[in-house]
Image (tube, rainbow, N blue to C red; front, side):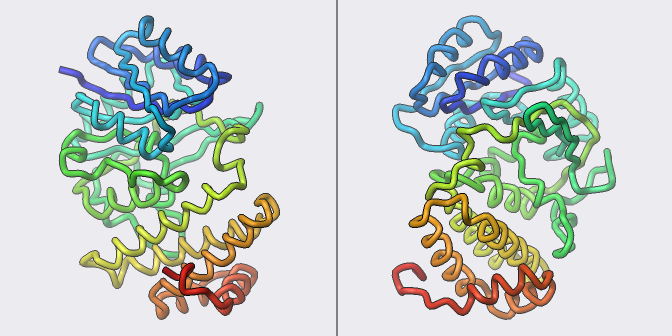
Length: 325
């Protein structure tokens, strides 16, 4: 039986894929499989993955005929995965040798639905450790209990799918698939659903994922219309949380986080092309009108003056019926 399935989407990462694949080789085990999903790359990535399929133990090579984005590529990998446990890696990141064996040992010892881990962010030559924003380590808890408080960073704000490991029962319950077609913020509805619906989790102080930040081809660096999918993602978070049995408690967190993300994008609006910047403003104004207005009032009252003023000004902006829908 396959112990661990590792789902690794690739898209136009010929410069970084060799490092990623070397680190997978340094983590290979007879009972591990590496599902390499080429999301219709147009550079040399397909050739690199074809070689890896022959040379990397446990490699399974899948290819999309059209580009679907990270969420769709991860779903392709999930559908093919056979492991008792599942995890993710992005095609431009890399791992410490032997990391996955330690990760499997951690979740087997704890016996929970999923485990979250710290990671190392790599920006050029700088290295920074980023930790799960939850203080208790190696203790099994109900993930619903760590969503709050609304005004502090919590585990649902640490939305990196690759920073953890997940038991197959979560996939069987429909909790590990992503919203098809989301081009950015795809981890947000996913991590919220996981924390609302899974039964147990733990955070561990295990470092082994190296997250490459500032890649030119990354959507976090590109100010095009795909960035605006964060609105679809957070609309989903708010809608699903509003239907939760604890909606009164959890909605303030969802709405406040949504507001903070809108404010963040407005604060760096100069990186967007003018038509996209205009669309960002109109779509964000419509999003504010869709939120539960009483909860939104409280969220704005709890924010600092600069962000609250920016959002209140946007809230007053007229919105066409087409954008509002």
